[in-house]
Image 1 (cartoon, rainbow, N blue to C red):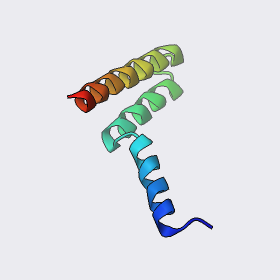
Image 2 (spheres, helix red, strand yellow; image 1 turned 60 degrees about the vertical axis):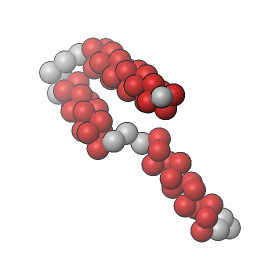
Image 3 (cartoon, rainbow, N blue to C red; image 1 turned 180 degrees about the horizontal axis):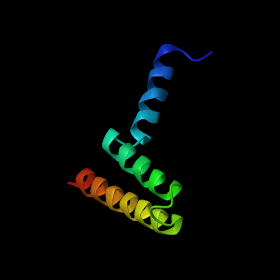
Image 4 (cartoon, rainbow, N blue to C red; image 1 turned 120 degrees about the vertical axis):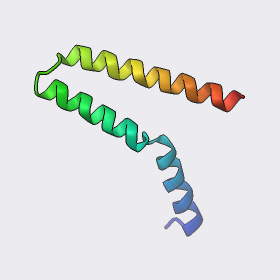
Length: 65
């Protein structure tokens, strides 16, 4: 059975991988737009992937600075 420190470490690791609230709302809206055929799913996928790549790039630049 994992101890309290291991559990806290696992929770922090998971939180670090989750998108922020704003990003989750953005992806949720993008998903809803595709689900209701406001935009085609390949377009939604391209927008989502592009946004994720930009966010990753920005995060990497901040970490290196």
